[in-house]
Each structure stands twice: as structure tokens, then as C-alpha cells.
Image 1: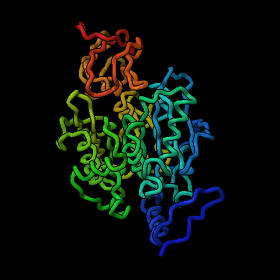
Image 2 (image 1 turned 30 degrees about the vertical axis):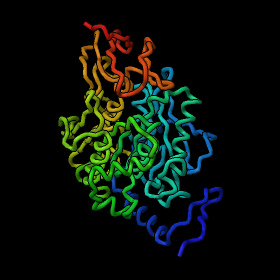
Image 3 (image 1 turned 120 degrees about the vertical axis):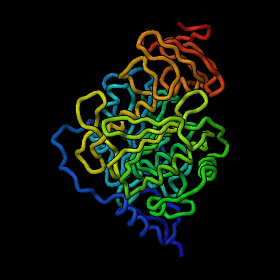
Amino acid sequence: MPLPPFRGAPGARPRARVPRLVPRLLAVLAVVLGTALAGPAPEARAAVTLTRVTGFGSNPGALTMYVYRPATLPARPPVVVALHGCTQNAQVYADNSGLPQLADQDGFLLVLAETGTANNPNKCFNWFQGADNRRGQGEALSVRQMVSHAVSAYGADPGRVHVTGLSAGGAMTAVLLATYPDVFSAGAVVAGLPYDCTRDNSPYTCMNPGVDLGPAEWARRVRDAYPSYTGPWPRTAIWYGDQDTTVVPRDAGELRDQWTALHGLSQTPTRTTVIGPDATRQDQYLAADGTVAVEVDRVPGIGHGTPVDPGSGGEQCGSTGAPYFPDSICSSRWIARFFGLDTTAPGDPAPGDPGPGDGTAACWTASNYAQVQAGRATASGGSTYANGSHQNMGLYNTFVTHTLKESPAGYFTLADSGCP
């Protein structure tokens, strides 16, 4: 027997009619995903200053938008959208993930979406509800409206929009990549789940023990989210702790299967390396043009959370001042690098990109799509423009290829006729 229409806090949005099981399901999810872990007391430190933004759209998902804008921001900056985990909020994620520090260093606009108890008893994004995980409605549409506002109000680059999130925020990251592949060029799912697992499974079954589907079926579920879309598909990084019992490591394999299949790639990595101070294993799946289309980062010895590495070193970031931020590797630094936003080593290629990187005159041959993903060019109005020189490179796709010369660092010119 269906429940009466949703009645939440004053001003809360109405929900579709849902089965009787859902209130109990939400409570179970709140416990499973949101039970606070025993950890150190918060550190005595100044909180990151966030700006709350109102009026960014119709906001059907009843989310709150915050922005962290670095003091120095380039024209047409890239955007990173960040989604917190259960029991958290935007401020906690900003204070501990290390993303604001990287926004300062790398020059991107950080947008933080926040949900609350009016939507979910334990402040989890509703990645498992059809009212919120479909294109054009609910929480997914609210985040998409935040991106549109960031582009119009802050002059951000619509061709360089990325998203990352933890746990329920990680699962919602997968939702956004699936439902808005035309908006997000890349995403990083941290301790999240494959898109649309709950089509025929309960959320807690999807989380643990996980659901085993073939790559083709997982890919079909993403295609069903936006049937008229023909690509290119967002690049996807997958991060997980190998001791996670909340969202089990099996889900990382299913996510890998989903996104490698979408890119038409084998589920066998092109190459495997060890990164960071804790011997994190990084598997990369390269497209034909050398771009890293999918990446899986397995962090040893940690459970559920966003890995951080507090300190002042170049590869360090974040804080352990709240639960779900285990001391390990600065995952946000590596995620920014995957997005092509890392400016700490000018002239060096992003992981998986072709071309030399000696810091002087470097040449880079790749598709226009790959050049944009690596931060060497910008997409606008369906065309591609070299960063620095603003030379027109033609259509933004995977079929047009050019060679760019970088000299000085950050200034790119067309060099198809040859590059020393």
C-alpha cells in the first residue's frame, strides 16, 4: 500500500509516492553509511571560508550551494564540484579534504553542494532514489543548476567542469557522470558505487556485499540515463580503501567495468604503478590517443573515507580533523592531477598523456578532447582553443588531432608542421 505524499520540513520539496519500505530503508542507510567512526578530536584550526549562493535555479533537489573562490583566479577557470559524505556537510568536506588548498594552488573554482536532514535522515545524497538520480529532476538537476550558475556568475569554463565526492557523495558523483555526461568532463568517485545499481537491488545490497553485473550491462544502465547522448564519455577515477566494509572493494571493480565498457576498453589495465607514501596501487586504462580514460586507485590499509595526508609538502593535503578522512595519501592532489588541473609541475604531462615534459619547449600530440582534458586547451561553443594563444584548433571531439607546443609554461601554440 503506497504511503501518502512526502511531508518534510517546511518548504521541503514534494516527493513521488514511494513504497512502505522506504522510511525503514532510509533509516538503515543512515546507520550503515552514516554512523560516526571513532577518531581524533577536531584540530584547532581556522575553518575554510565558504560563500553561500542562493538563487542558482529552481533547485528541485532542495540542496544548498557553497563556493570557495581563490583570491587569485584565472579567466574562465575550471570548476570542481565536491559532494560530502553522510553525516557531513560542505564545511566539513572543505575543511578536511584539501580541495580548497588545491583550488588556491591550481586556480580552479570549488563548488560544494550540501544536502540535509529534510532530504535524508543522516544527510546522505539520495543516489538510490529515482526522484534524485535521473536527468532533469531532483538532486541531480540541482547540482547541474549549480554548474550553470558557476559558469554565468563567475565566468567559469563550461568545457572544464569536474565532480568528486565521498561515499553517498561518491555514488552521486557516478549519478552526475551518467546523467550529465555533456556537462562533466571528468569525475572521481571516492568509496562510491556504480550508477543505477538500485534499479533491481536494495542500496545496502549494492554497498555490501555488492552486485556483480557484466560490463555491458553496467554500461547499458549509464546509456539509459541519457539515451540520445553519443559521447564523448567523462573520464572517471575510482578511489577506495582496501579495508572498506561499508562500500566494499568489489564496488570499485564494478565501477571499473561500467566505465571501461563505456569507453570501449578492456577491463585489464594498460599499466599499473605504485604512487604516494603508502604504496597506493594505481591501475590506468588508456584510450587510443593516450588519454587516461579510467583510473582505479586502491589505497592499502584504510577503510571508508577520503584519504588525506596532512602536512606542508608538495604532495600533501587535507586534515584528519573529522571522521572519514583517514591519514594516508593526498587523494585530492591525485584527483586534481587526473582532472588535468595540477599546476605544481609546469610542462609535465598529466598521467597517461603523450609528449615530453622537460619544463622548456614541450610538444603534445593528441585529440582536441584529450588536449582539453589535460588543460592545454579550452572548449567553447563546440570548438577548441589553445590556452595562452587562443588559436582555433577546430571541433571539440576525439577525431581532430593537433600538436601543441608549450613555451613558456602554460602558453600553447599550434605546431602541426613540426616541433623541436
